[in-house]
Length: 126
Image (cartoon, rainbow, N blue to C red; front, side, top):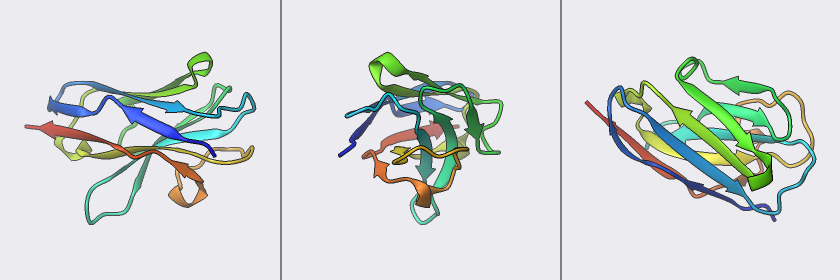
């Protein structure tokens, strides 16, 4: 069973930055998709960013392109999300997710992901 643990959430003023981390247990050296999603109560979960663990390709949701950067440290089994120029509308619970098996490309579709972390809250205030 794969487990994911997020950390790094918090509160920040609009225009500021935050960095999230997600550590993957039982990490496989084979490539697989790992992504960040976010959700506001009462709304559908939104795909934020994805990467192919062990690869170089990344994918982003339109609302975060140019502001967020997803990266990895394979040796540490960790996925990162650097969030810059944060907006109030970025406020949400952020989740890390992993997809079982090798798939290409990595889509930002929550229904394709098999393992989820507990989430970490990000609050951006004006």
